[in-house]
Image (tube, rainbow, N blue to C red; front, top):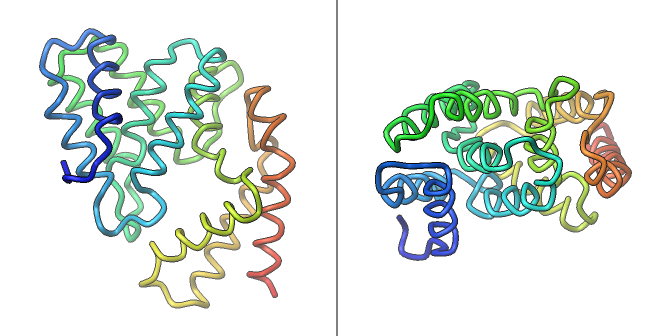
Length: 213
């Protein structure tokens, strides 16, 4: 773990795994996860993003069927992240299965965590998938921040894709924004929808205008 990594995150991971019935010491896997989240290629998908998603999961936990499974999925959902690769979620899910199996968690919960991680490819949980709704809403909460916070998020995403030429990035980013705006619902939990939907749509539309301009 990097020397400046947040010890509170490591403590939260350790407590989470113990609460979930880990039979092995959680600290080594927590250190490895935090090392991954602090990799130098990350500008947005960083430890700050992990911390924010976990906080949103906590705020929405009352909606979840298994809040701790959602928390575990939050830890793993971008644990493998290379901006030039397309299989990050699948590799993150595989990492979750491996790490949680080594930790001694129950197979059913491990399968649920892996399912939730894979769901972040589309952010389209099925109706009634309360755990999926919480994770997806927590992951997309950044879209509903203030215009200033959203601008910082968009700039960090651009920095992660600095290797992509500007015309290609603008075209690809615009396609992503249109896909998000076309979703029948950006947020699925009542709390997130009420708080984030309107500002998120305004932020997405404003960025799209700059890309199309």
